[in-house]
Length: 435
Image (tube, rainbow, N blue to C red):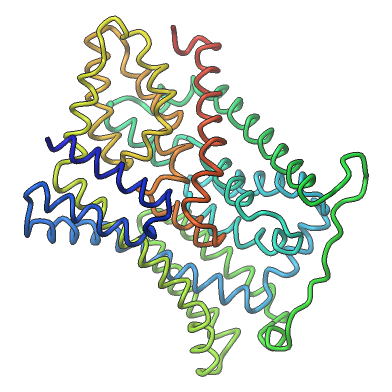
C-alpha cells in the first residue's frame, strides 16, 4: 500500500508539473502533504517536512547568496569583458557557441559540483545567448549534458555507490573511463547538433562562412551608472577566491558562508553607499526568493517521501519484479533505466536504499556487485540529476536560465537519456556488461 501511494505521489507530481496544472512550488508542497495525510501519517507530516527543510537549509543558503553575489558582480560589469572575449573566441555562430558552453561546463564541473558548474557557466553565457536570440533551453541542455556525463571519483554518485556497496572507487571508476569518453563524445556531438539547429532556426545559410550578426550591446544610463570597470580585476580575484575556497575547503567551510562573505565584500567595494547596497539587494531579491521557495518546497517533498517510508517501500517492491533468468541482464537493464529512475529517487534513497538491495539480489543470482554499481552510475543522478525534481540543481538551472521546469525537462530529457543509452551500449561493446 505504501509503495503504491509513493508511486502515485510521484506520478501525480510529475503530471502536475509537466502539464503545467500546478507550478513546481505548489506541486512540491501540496501533492506530498495530501499523500501523507491519505497514508494516515497525520501530524507526523509536519515532522517529515521539518526534517526535509533542515536537510536543505545549507543548500538554500548557498543558492540565495550565490544569486545575490553573481547579481552584484554582473551589475558591476565584471562579466562584460569575459563575454566579449568568449564572443571573439567562439565567434557568433551558434554551433561554436553551444560547443563552447559545453566545454566550459565540462571544465568547471571537474570539481564534481553541479551547483558550482551551473552558477559559473550559465551567468557567463546567458548574455551571449540573449544577444544572439538563441533558445535558452539550449543553454540549459548544454550545461546539463556536460555536468551529467561527469562521474569522476570525487563526485557524489561515485562516492555513494562506493560506500553503499563497500567497493573501492577505483574498482567502479577505472573500467568506466573509456565509457565516459564515449559519453563525452556523444555530448559534444549533441551540442554540435543543437548549434546547427539553432543556426537553421535563426535563418543562417549552412554554406555561409559568416555567423549570425552580433547585435549591438546597448546598456541603459541606469546600467552604466552601476558599472565599475576599475574594479574588474578585484571582482575577478574575489570570484576566483570564493569559488576556489568552495572547492579547496570542501566540507570544512559551508559554501553558503563563502558566498555570504563574498557578497558583503563585493557590496562594500563596488557600492560603498548604504542606499546603493540596499538597491542592489532589492534588485535581485525576487530571483533569490523564488529560488529559495522552490528549494524549500523540494525539501518538504523529499522529507515526506523519506520520512513516511514511501521511497523505501517502492524500492523493496521494485526489486521483487526481477526474474531469476534475467540475472545476467540486470546491469544492462539497470544501465538503461538508471537515468529515468533519477525522477523517482533522490541520490541518498537510491544509492543507500535501492542499490544495496538490487546488488544483493544480483549477487545471489551470480552477478558481481561492481557491475550493479557501474550500471547505476551511467544515469542515476549523473545524467539524470539536471532534470530531476528531487535535486536542487535542477531548479538552479531553471532559475538561472529562467526556463520553466516542464520546458527544461521536455527539451533536455531525450538528450540526457540518449547519453545514458549510448554509454550502456558502450559497456556492452567493451565487455564490461554481458548480454
